[in-house]
Amino acid sequence: MRIGVIGTGRVGSTLGTAWGERGHEVTFGSRDPASGAVAKLVSGVPGARAADLQETVAGADVIVLAVPGAAAEAVARSLSGWAGKVIVDATNPMRDDGPSNAEAVQNAAAGAHVVKAFNVIGVEAMARAARGEAGGTMPLAGDDDGAVATTAQLARDVGLEPLHVGTLAMASSLEELAWVWIAWSRTLGRTFLWRVER
Image (cartoon, rainbow, N blue to C red; front, side, top):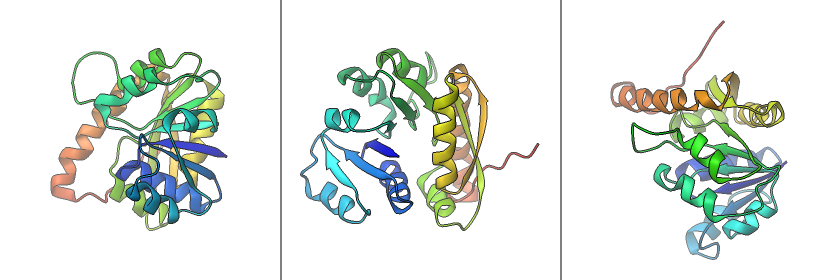
C-alpha cells in the first residue's frame, strides 16, 4: 500500500516506521523534506522516502494526518487532490467545543474519505503493539466502508485489533477517549492499551 504520513513527529514516525517494516511504501511528508531530522528518519525505514506535503498527497493512496491537532484542518485545507483518497486522522483537538478534528478535516478535504483512528493511545503503546509485546483494540470511525476496511488493515499491521464504532460523527467520542488515556497514563504509565471484548 502507498502510505503518505504527513507529520514526522513521534506519532507519524512510529506508525510510518512500523508500516515500512511490514512492506508498505511509505512517504514521509514534511514542509522541509531535506532536513537532517527527516533524512535520519527515512534512513531507518525500509524503502521510505521524504517529500513535500503536496507531493505526498499526490503519490499516496492513504494519507495519515499526524500533525498537531490544532493544525489538522489548516493542513488539509492547504492541500489539493484529495478526491478518492483515504485520510486517516490520527490527531486530537486542543479544544472541547466545535466539531471533531476528523469532521473538520472531512470538510476541508473535498472528495476524501476520512477515518478517525490511531488517536486513542500514545506512541509508547503503539510501539509496544507494533513490536508484538501486547495486543489492543483500535477503534475506528468513518463513513466509507472501503476506507474503514483499509484503515482496519493498517491497524492489524501494527498489532492492533480494529473496531469500527460507527460513522465519522463518532469521531468526537474517540477524541474524548484520548483525553481519558492521557489522564490515566499519569498513573498507569504510557504503554497501556485499550481492549474491547464482545
